[in-house]
Length: 331
Ligand SMILES: [Fe+2]
Image (cartoon, rainbow, N blue to C red; front, side, top):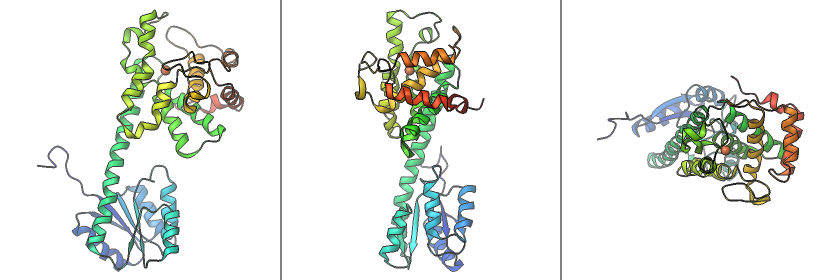
């Protein structure tokens, strides 16, 4: 028995072709294969439809007026929110040059006219299976990020701390010359860095005064706990080193592994500075934040001891350019 608790939904396939007879033909095939079909007349029409309702798969002709298939494909694949939508390019022949252009534009597969129903089924099924998996990974990642926000609120800390750490870390990465997915990893690791605090007892987390030795040990466990929480999710694999090592110190006196210098993962060295800065300047229930000048002084003092000197300089440079003001998230 399937579809009892979760109603079965048909995958939505968008067919893009300027020739209506071709669209109708494909729609017929796809309908018989159990898909829900939408149609678009050209690239621009398709772009609008993709934004209005994200399809699970796009079958795309190449030669079309207004916007051709290759341009549309490149546009979709460059959009971080849509790039996981699979695209099959329909080519008229085994034209190698067109296929290469298609691959360059990010196409996931090709289909050659005239269509063969069996081939169409196999190619669409493979991509739709990946699509379903990616959707589930996305959902899992969303749950973890929501959990991260819950941790922040439980901490009694301002709920926007994680978001600022995320923004600062990403901007540092950008200034260092990273791009694309690396920046995304920095942002999300910044959001998740303290997720392990969910395993720290409230009495320790919310204690206003200094922690005794046992309490400190419980608090320090949050970086390893964070790694443990994220570990089963493949989509968070790249965040693990940052979550685990964000309390390492450049001189090797940090935790959990006492790593020193460049043995500390680069992302963790960046997040450590963003985290420390925001912790210093933010008010906590039991103490007021320090002034910006004082926080800058402490960062400078910790260069080469607590933090990577090069990244402290990078961060201070960004502060001079107004990073703290720009990175204030919406209330
Ligand atoms: Fe932490």
